[in-house]
Length: 459
Ligand SMILES: Cc1ncc(COP(=O)(O)O)c(C=O)c1O
Image 1 (cartoon, rainbow, N blue to C red):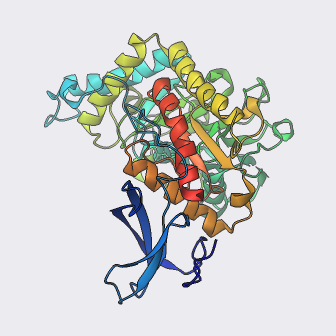
Image 2: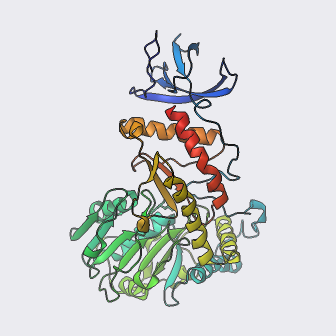
């Protein structure tokens, strides 16, 4: 529909937009409150407002004396759902706190104390011991708390262990691509084979040769695709498997015997705080650490051995650098919660139920689909959705991102959902966290709002 005198059409602006500001007003005809998204170009001219031509009239924002046509959207196309999620936090990291969490319930005695004092070190060791027991990590594996969250843990593993033999790298979304790039461009390894797949797909696991070292992500947080199991990893492998499992651990079954190095961060499935990460090493990974010296220097923050021996203290709570004891208390509280609700099985079950809520909704949707079409590869934590309505798919990439952004802004404005826009490198779409700390009832309440937001933006 085109405005008869101004000639504006309800489409996305192709100008490079400087900023968006929300303005609230009332519809002059029905008196309902309408939210208008106005975009400004680099000269601060209002160039574009939301794009549903239900009502059109000129409005003066007093900017560059521009009278612009406001294309209303939002309140008219469909009725607003009544119920909102009790907790609108669906971010894929940091993820929402466990139900019942409160800052006041965390112990603060350790704050201001040295993390090397015996009680504080014991708390760090308890994080290790409780994580190990909750996850069912074999006794002969060592688990440590390391700097730099999951990124630090995984980089540390690659820098310590790779280079001894050829490396096979699997990548099917942003994080795997990052590890591949670091192996090629930072470590400068030449003897590498890369298995890549597009967003929504998985590379052919049958082609992986486990006699080489294998680097992969268990759950691709930015594409919502995960490996289905560890059956493709040989029990008699000569190489090591290095697995970034940060959005899988505590939400998916991990075949520990197939994993020589596994990393995760506190801020993921248990909803902890950013800061330190965790690493689990098999006896073969430890043996490699003690027998192989990489050709490149290792910064102190990455060093796990001294004089050819594993620094055992790191795996008993003597972290390399200073951790936040508040983050440690928070992680301990999350581990207690996980244990109280029934342990790993319950965590996995909660995540599966969350995925089921979204699967049910998507099944009857005429505009939404999973980025990962194959159900057996679908993540139950980072649940990535694409919009398959021709109105959307026919638009340019910029316009599609604009739609998703507007949907996200509308939902956040209503305090219904925060942080559910897809990852910046992924195809435009939505990403909703379904890990164990999210309540299925909140996802149920969110679903009609997705329809509402899409209809509001589309008009
Ligand atoms: C698969 C994967 N790897 C690495 C990271 C980085 O994690 P962190 O920020 O905890 O270092 C993330 C974070 O979302 C992730 O999803």
